[in-house]
Length: 373
Image 1 (cartoon, one colour):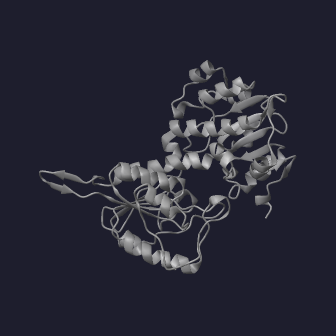
Image 2 (image 1 turned 45 degrees about the horizontal axis):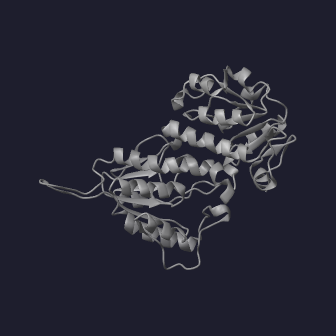
Image 3 (image 1 turned 135 degrees about the vertical axis):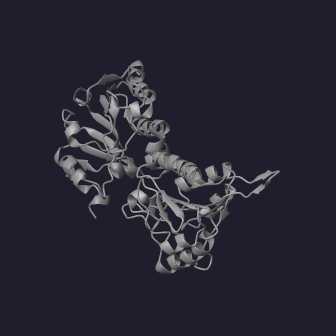
């Protein structure tokens, strides 16, 4: 069993799918591990560290030659996979709803594409969930970057010259990223509030010491879809939410938006009129900017100033924490493959629950039920 990891080639991608730690663990399972030269340099991992762990460090073509499994952060181009064994697994994020042509090309090439972002949200798969591990870091980074752009202090400071008031931070969307954003803003001393379409998150918000901001007048709307993901709300709820948020957002110094719906454009949470209601010098960080944005007028990797408010957001937030993001992503890969490792076969053998959930292509065909609808 040969496992290979290549250097990421997508623009702005600094992460790597294999670390010396996980390379050593795969070797302990009986696998041969190869990594492309320079694959970890953007994540502060030198080639020597891989070699010391027992991995072969080779040019791309030699690293992938004879590979049974190829690990990636973002799905590698087919040109880099020439030489991999027929039917080789490629485990990475594929963005399959948007990059459907790439999925079809993988099928045509006879490769088995495993979309790590389709990992089901069940208890035994938590340690394999790349969306959660990367969103956790993204929520942290959003607050840290917003604090840097914001021209004032976060905590209340009582000095001989007077009192500095605590910054008011509002988190919109309380998934993994939102929860970490709440925790980070609280640690920095901000006065934090948060909202979400899922009523079950109210207790989570309170447990972190933040104030929940919820629509109470519209009953019977839970906002939770399959797998624990948020779903789009009714027009009635959206209207009620917009009115509530409009009044609250005008008082905030920093707003972090995190709302995403799998396979859909990011929902619009903040309008131009709501931006105009905020105080000059306020900051909005749009964590969904790469998926169309939660904020009207936000642009990936640009600072947009509207009505005196700075709107920011990265196209790839976890990539700005390359070392930690790579370490967690690589562990997700290891936890996934090792959980199914068959010692007698000397390779992983997937079960139906997880295997069918993440498998996009097999035997020259697109097999994912989520892509057939």
